[in-house]
Length: 262
Length: 244
Image 1 (cartoon, each protein chain N blue to C red):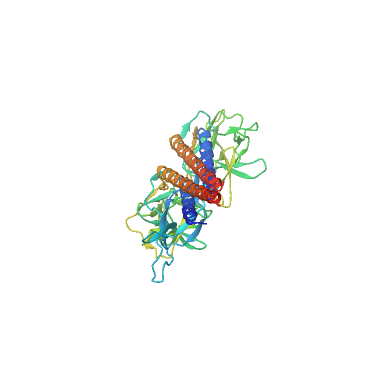
Image 2: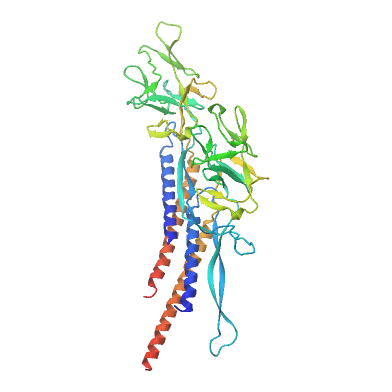
């Protein structure tokens, strides 16, 4: 019976839904994490009687026809690109992007990746790196003798050196934006990569038109809303149960049929 | 086969089809913009010649599924917060340009493609009054007005093409939440658009489960009727055999 396979598509879809919700909840406290949502669509229809087909020679039409669906499919798992809240921290290398834009990070294999996680550190050579040791691009080296580091909202990095009154500029933080943020591929470790769906990266100075500003001593929290995740979880769980009820009902019907002629 | 078996067979086929439709409703419980469907039955009468010793006309009534009826009532609106999730209040549809021509949908989940054009998850362009709508990165946050006006930082970008039909129930389902039709699409009046919202399906779990139980039980009843009839026939054969 078709109903069996239809209900199984429903169960599979709800399983995906629960997995997405679980991942959101697990990353509730991950810096710069963007909540995801599963988007569903109905599957193909088999048309047995086309709606609007002629039902007699006098031109009367079938009002609704018969179209049998084949279930549901997960069309996409999309990312909510809304900004998370900014949280104050005490490290001078913590930076949050207030608005649009990603930090550009160089991966060990030389390719570029992008992140909203501005939880940076210094490497042994004084370079600004991510928690995994990947260099922030363009590279910024903080002299070892520096006593204080200031990052302006426009991304200018200046240091205070002993026995110098004037601040010395050591670099400029750049932001990258994409025509379609949601099309970036998540690489894990809070990193994203460019895809043909995200469009090509466009670099710019923080604070210029269309780019966010840099907030030093702040980190962007995840944008997961725990209340809405929990309500989605309940609804997904119930939907899963309903689909399994359909399967057991179909099973009962098939058993009845099998008893016939016995 | 005799008439009892044929009659119960006609119902069993119809019951199976109802079950398929119920299963599809339940599977699409969380599909945005999905409209629940139910099977409508009709009876087909067959006139019989009166048997010996009986008078008056006798007829058999077979059951057949006449159509799948779509409930076009609105589903409740759920907040998602995504900028390209749109819900239509009132009877209207979004127009989407596909390779096969213009299609219509109530599933208001859209996204951008690499060029910044608003598309469905299948990559089909959402239609505005002047064709596809493209957003430049400089437009910043995009907002949709209640009348479907799209605006960004640099001013108005277009207006959504919202359409309505004379007979909504006659739209043909194409899957992927799309409908096609040969009817003329009129500009929808008295509809509003809400941004950051999705219209959920109008499937009511209680209704589907109770319908499911009803179909299952009547299917069982028909099967046992069939079985009882078969037993009766067997007993009659045995009785007749003893008189030989």
